[in-house]
Length: 283
Image (cartoon, rainbow, N blue to C red; front, side, top):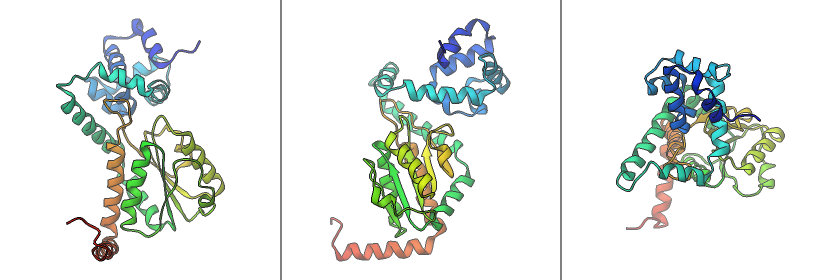
């Protein structure tokens, strides 16, 4: 019977050096964090060398740390169901510490996401957004909140955004998508099958450009995307935290406003004038 990654780690305990045992203990105690950290980051967190982490991976039978990390990510997706995540987190959180620990978790999510992002990926994303004929936003369940925020925020600057339904398939609207368009997809574990299948179909049939906000470069939509914007999503409860995905969304909106300042200012001014005429805001 094939062993999962934690079973492999535990089965090798007697074959590890003292330094490698530290790596083993860190990974088992910090499954989600370790699945996102780079080789340098995980070595720094443990207080050991990258060579030690690599030798630990070799000892488990992996070709390198990246292969170990990919299997760790796959394990987390398959095993950490909402109820499992909640049970695990309840063991480490008490009422007195929850305010501080929740804040620390979200700050860590954003900091780790910042380290995973590249300026080149953000610049390329803005280039895709600016050249797209139509921009389609897609996400399901909690991921829909990020798609909706992007839709509302980008619509304040652009007049070519469409929000796709997260439930079922927008067949008629999908038929309007073509290679001149852009899809921005939010897809986090445990991935919504409807989102994955819709993106696959649209990519194969209509071939638009695709930017995906997801958990890493081993996610299901990587091979269907032109740009991957990776983020961390861990929380102290049972759900995916939206702090880091929202940070990426806000980053895109802010960067677009900076690079298209005059156009954005004009559209915002027109919007404000219309809202005054409609007496939209409470006073």
